Length: 251
Image 1 (spheres, rainbow, N blue to C red):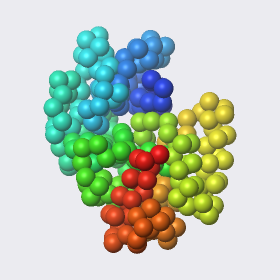
Image 2 (tube, rainbow, N blue to C red):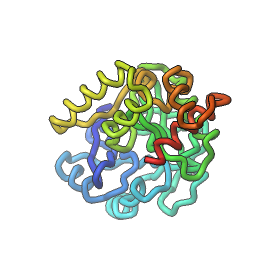
Image 3 (tube, rainbow, N blue to C red):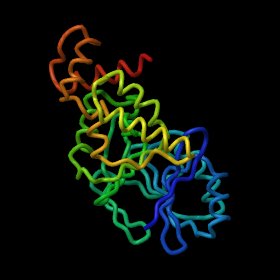
């Protein structure tokens, strides 16, 4: 399976999973770039995977399926008119001959799901390059648990998130851990990629564990930053994570 991003809006990526002239799409929030992609590639649309119900992830689906009737897989816990195959935690879905496990990862939204197979995670807005999604509907405890679930996956897992946010997230990561050499290295590498017009994602889980403050709640540097933000030492991992997330939200 070959995977490539279709840019949409200002900073979204619609992931195209391609195999032998067929394509499955992840979170097509906009139809126009997808239709252009299909016309240029000659691929036949086979399926659509949805991670959550926000408009920039599902806004293009109605137009696409009107022209290309295909199954639309998505979270059972989020009622949308476009999802025809609702999925829950632990379900399995086969797309283009590849089996994915469905992971329920609430926090950004209550029903947010991701699609996982060994070596690949299609995670929507739960985890970004050096960042994570805002906690809109869930709780900090839920978001922390979702990120902990991702952190326990094999470190070589490729992380396919839905936004090109890595540079801005790394700038914040440097505020949290200014002495983290891995963050400085990654910042330089991402700057080179973006200067050449290349996407900064997917990343690997190993890179996220080394540079993403929202996965590093046990790092002394992150705990120290949370302490400064709170005015007292955090009581546990969740409070450390929540302090860093609220600091980010305040900027």
